[in-house]
Image (cartoon, rainbow, N blue to C red; front, side, top):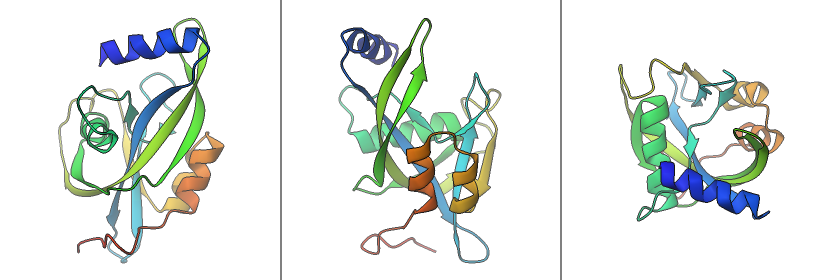
Length: 157
């Protein structure tokens, strides 16, 4: 993953757009409504969705699933079609770069008590409208606020 970040930085220096993949972990709450999980970023402690760099030899959907496991301690089934995209300014060592993010919905089947980044992040389950209020990126906030689980891929109960 370090190689992917270095490649992204090289592209950004050339003025090219760079991309990441993200997951929106979701589940059905006790009231039967959809809940989504947000995590805090390691540096600014803002609420975000689990995301990361594309991984060589892995689909965007698979990479998003791996990021959700590492950053949020959840695993499950990523829906085939992306839920949408958003762009944001990523803070790098000595500059900000524009990043385009492809977002996948991840139906959570397991929530781990201990996971790779547990000591560096907090996580929270929220209704999508509440999660949207906590997100700084306007496009991601809109995506969360308007979140709909595709009928063709029903949520298992």
